[in-house]
Length: 317
Image 1 (cartoon, rainbow, N blue to C red):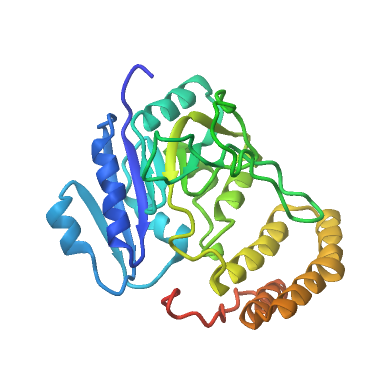
Image 2 (image 1 turned 60 degrees about the vertical axis):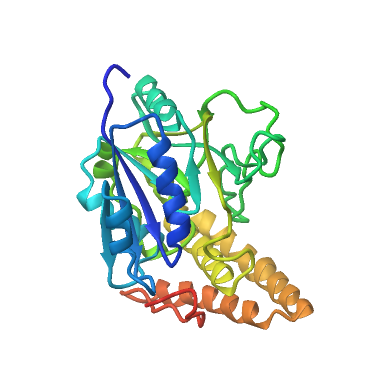
């Protein structure tokens, strides 16, 4: 691009000030300087505002009095962002040099591009010693019956097999860039999801509006995956299942939704409950049932039902 547009970098912190500071350090080291950086604190136990203002005076800190989830937290910063582009990045990630420039170049070359993600790799403190382990190099579409899709490149060693920017069914919420004009056109991420699937829903809306979704593997972000929630927490089980169903309800036609519902009733629910019972994972079984019930109640209600996940150490409301 001939000029350097302003990029608003947005991240959400929840009880992980150390990780957030590591991200901010990586932003400081980055070669692209025409940025404004927002940290939204999602009602952490200790308010990080004083620390961030002292050691990162260039950062704009927004403190929420309640945990608004991923979408809700990010949306607080979108309200104030002045950038031509919004770059959302998880606080448990680190930006690499040149990442923003390469994403901006892709947008400059594709006028209908609405959202794009870089290549995501699992964080490794010994980077350069051995090939990176890829987390995301794009995705396939969500199957209209099973509601499952595939992450391209996941857990492959990076041997240069992904070098060319290409369309992707969905961006990755850990790192994604959106022009401010596109966000204004299609609307912001839906707060209802709280955690997981909000970026898939947003991508579906962006593409429905006529824009493209791409991945640029020459841009790279390192992600400290599952630091925020935990690899197999009841919180993760609840929101993955609740929002998988909710995504299908929002983004499929009546026939597709019927086929998915039949698959859910006669295969997914029995399979998961049997699996949780055999493993003795009763908390996961309980929140799985709550996830399904939330969607049933929501379908017949004019307002969204309250979440009833008993994991107060993770979710603060």
